[in-house]
Structures are given as structure tokens and as C-alpha cells.
Length: 280
Image 1 (cartoon, rainbow, N blue to C red):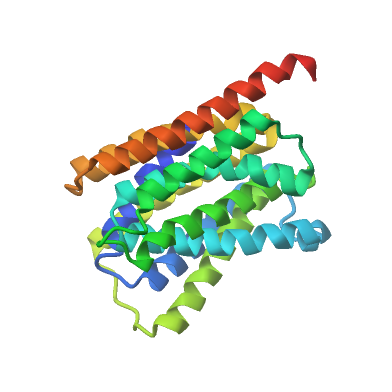
Image 2: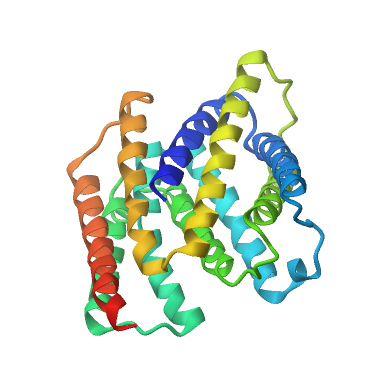
């Protein structure tokens, strides 16, 4: 999970840079098309069949819908808002994962965990600052993207064993390409010819993204949700560091306070889950 979070932060940095020069929809389509080709080759090498009836099950269709919104809105967030802010909001994912596990999988949640979840969501509000003068609807992009990723990860747990991480990766990047096409139609911006530098940045983002996606699917499908998800917080360190060092972004006290509350709540939930583990 830690390796996945580091690679995702690197992917974000390259995508944020290239979306300053190319339309977001075009970037999503190219990135998705290249990624699905890579995962198709990986699936073929592993002997996994891409076209299976299980892909069309209800849970996998739900997974695709969540992936669509997660990919689209989070890329929009890193393109249009500070990377450090988008990364900070993404850290609420473990809280929503636990909440989603309660709703979809009927997992038990005790009173202390409920308190931690609501405290964490309060931390997200501090980061968003909906009452501040500089708040805009763009601030919600990362939150919508985060909810999409949460649903994607939850329904990945229900994927049949025949749908390997290579197959899931193929459909994940296919969904990204579809999201890019839909946004291009809505946005109406014409495609732009790629320069060598832009091609290299997209290639670097693809390498980081393929590795990150594979590592994430492995972590979510083989580890306990409670044990694995707290390590998502390592992405905050990577993402904020890149935002400050590479993009010259500024951190303020409310954001740091919100991050501390969200991380504290998430770590408490992880600790609670670890305490209950021996009794299971």
C-alpha cells in the first residue's frame, strides 16, 4: 500500500503538469488507452482471460461506475486545484471505506469508530472550508473523486478470483478512457498534438500508474481492509511534499489541522481494527 501511494503521487505530479498543456479529456483518453493496452499484455502473459461473464455482474458494474467518477473528478481536481489540497482530501478515503464496509458489507462498527468517522469528516470540512471566502465548487472535485475511489476499492473486494488484478486493471483504464471521451464531448475542447516532452511525461505517469494500480489491487484484495487502509496516509506525505517542492504550493494552518484530524481518526480506526483482529 505504501509503494502504491508513492507511485500514485508521482502519477499525480506528471498528470498535473501535462494537463496544463493538454485538455483534461484528451489526457484521460490517451492515458486510459495506453494503460489498458499494458494491462491487456500483462493479462495475456499471466494467462488470464479479459473477456469473462463475471465482468458483467452487478458488483463489477457498480465498481466501473465508481471508477468512472473517481478517475474523472480526481484528475480534474489535481488539474484545477492545488495538488496538496486534493491529496489532503483524498486522505478521507479510509474513513469512507470503513463507512462503506458497514453499509455494503454489513461489517460491525462500534461507537468509538463512529465517533472517529465523524471527527474525520469534520477534518475534511476544515480542509474544504466551505465558509471561507476563497471556497469554490472546484474544491468539491477531490471529494467526489475520493468517493469514487472508495466505491471502486470496496467493490474490488467482491471481485471473483478469476478477475485477476491484471483484468481489473484493464477495465479500470478502459473506464478512464471512457471518462475522458465523455468529458471531451462535454468540454468541447479540440485535441492538441503531442510534443516529445508531453509524450515522455505521459509515459512516466503511465509507468507509475500501472505499478500503483497493481499494488493497490493486491493490497485491497489480499489484506484486511482495517489493516491495509491506514497506510493510505503515506500518500499525504508524498503528495504534499511534491506540491510544495515541485509546484510551489503553500500550506496554511487550517489545512494542517484538518489533515491532522483526518489522519488521527483514520489511525484510531485502524488501531481499533487491529485490536479486534485476534478475536476474529
